[in-house]
Every structure is written in structure tokens, then in C-alpha cells.
Image 1: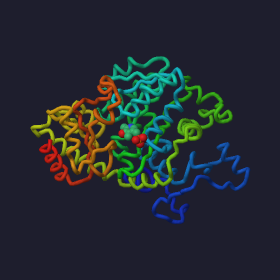
Image 2: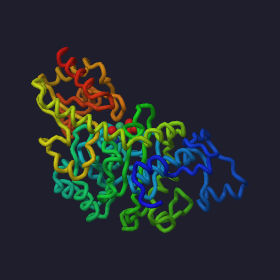
Image 3: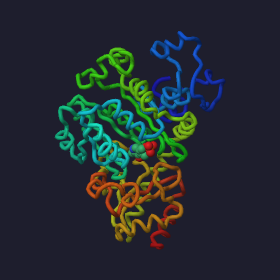
Image 4: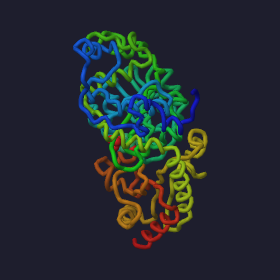
Length: 424
Ligand SMILES: *Cc1c(COP(=O)(O)O)cnc(C)c1O
């Protein structure tokens, strides 16, 4: 059937029960490798002459179903899953960029991604210009002849900025470079960046998609819309030394990138997702739609309530009317603005640190997107290694407390915050 909704796709896509002994649940294919019918079959698989499984670092039937579901819910032509979000991001960069290349990135990024672009990739000759992406002109002005991508988060973590995706995509298109969007915080249930012109979408599956805080995972989804033959990406048009002369664009067309990411990226960098974790993440994806809507509702209500507290200096949630991103959130996130809320206490850095020590339902830890509510004070933890200037670039202020709202009863969450405010 055509045009099924995302909730239905998330439950059914990619699983043909006739091929799995009728199992209603997606089975875990816990195997490292696959028996070839004969040596010719093996040769054909390695030459990509026929589809099939070779080795779980490259592909696996459980992972394959997760990939098909993620591609379908994001509206892409294909997906590849990875051991973590960080691995998905790094493998994408190392597949697309080489020494001498340049990236334009929003400065409002997950701390790990910021470090990768700011410290690790420059070591390999890949430079990034970080910009305040609220102003499209900043992105335009930063593009150089050697720029090979624009990188953004659809909702920045932890700044919670919502970017004008259509306008950012226009800049990418005008410059013949792909727009890569980390859609982890928004999730495919609330926002599909491909609809607005993103060429590549990345997720940390560890967060809302897995949803229960049990398993790390990452994914890359290819929109299939980028013209890799525009002269800026000769690795896609010239015979590949890494895959016995394969010309990716000529042989594969719209799936050129996602295939290269798998057969060179997963082969060479090895960030494969374990089938057991793929199974866990599939359980999460199946209920994402209902979870993220309830989580968004809880987050909005809590943010509104926090705004009225005497001890609170400011609250940031893209669904609040006084947010700088309210209008963009209405346009791009009309079904909900996800579960992250940040706020500051009048007592500043020390009050924030003490508060994060005083909650009992909110767990103090470095994760987001769990069914359980979480809290962290980034300036003293996740963003502690950054210089003061880099903290500013990534949107972290000294007093910022980040909450990741879960599925507990909202009144119990309020009670917990009340008692923590009293305790400090
Ligand atoms: C957590 C996170 C990542 C990294 O994902 P891991 O699964 O932890 O490796 C990347 N981007 C965003 C927005 C994240 O929140």
C-alpha cells in the first residue's frame, strides 16, 4: 500500500514475515558472517552483482530492517546504521571530506560533534568555520570554493535553536554542496529535514528513537537528491581505488552516497551496529510516534510552569511564546518541540550545580531522550573541556541546566523540582 503514515511504517516497514519463519517480532540475527552458496555466489556478492549478506560489519538482516524503517520514516532512498551517533557522523565526514576540504557548520552543536570538527578533523587537514546560523547571511558568507558541506542540527543541543531549514538548504543548493542535518533531538516523528531540502540526515539512535536508554546506535539517511557529479566530488565519478574501479555515480545514481558509506565507510572504519542493539532500537522506533508526542506535551507544560517560578531567571523551550524560535518551531515542529528544556536559576553557576545534585526523579547523567527524566549542568560536565569562548559558540552558559523530559507523571516532575529548589 502507498502513502502509509509514519506510525504505521515504523511498525511494519522492511519486515517480510514470510522470510523470518512467521516471527511477528523482528528476529535478532546474531551472526558475524554468512555462508555463501559457492565461490561464484561469494564473488558476485563482493562485486555487488547480486544483493546479499557478507559480514556483519557491512550488513545484517536485523540491521537491514532498521535501516529500511529509518529510510522510510525520514523519506530517504536508503540508510546505514552505526555503533553510535558519533560513529555515524565521523564516518559520514570521512567518506565525504579529504585533506584541504572545508565545512561550514552551525556553532550550536552537540559537544562531541563540535570537538570532532573543531579539534580532530583539523588534524587531518579538514577545516570548519562555525557560524551563528540564526542569520542565513553568516552561512552564505562562510562558504568558500573548497567548502564541501553545510552541517547543522535541526534543534541544536543544548541551545535549542530551531533553524530555518528551507533557507539553509537554499544556500547549500546555490553552492552545489550537500546539507547534512543531525535530526536527533527533533526525531523523524516531529520533523523530516529531507522535505525541506536536506541531502543527508543523521541520528543518534541512542536518544529518542531507541528511547529507553539501553543501547547506543547511530544512523545516516540519504535523501538521494544530491548531484555527486557536479565536479566537487570526484570520488563519486572517478574509478574508486578503494573498490576496484567502481564509479559510484555511474553505477548507483541516487544511492551512490549511501552505498559508498557502507562498502567503504563501514568496511574501513568498522563502526557497525550490533544486531542485538538494532533489535532494542527497533522496539523503540515502533513506539516513537506516541512517546515523542507525550514527551513534548510534558516538556511544554513543565517549561510553562518553570517560567513562573521566582527562583528561575530564564527558561528556553522552542514551544514557548517568548522563545526566539517560537515562529520557526510553529513552522517546522507543529506536532511538538521534543523533550529538551533549558533554564537558568537566579543563583547562577553554583545554584545550577547544586540543583543538579538535588533532584531525585531527574537522574544526573550525560544522556537525553530516555523515557526517564534526566538532568545535567553542561558547564561543569559535558562542555567542561571547552574554552569559555567555545562554550558560548555551542550555546552553553554558566548557569544553563538542561532537562530531558521523560514519561513520568508531570505532577511528580514538578514536585521533584519544588523539593530540589528548596534543598538549595
Ligand atoms: C548524543 C548525540 C550525538 C552522539 O550520539 P552517540 O549515540 O552518543 O554517539 C550526536 N548528536 C546529537 C544531537 C546528540 O544528542
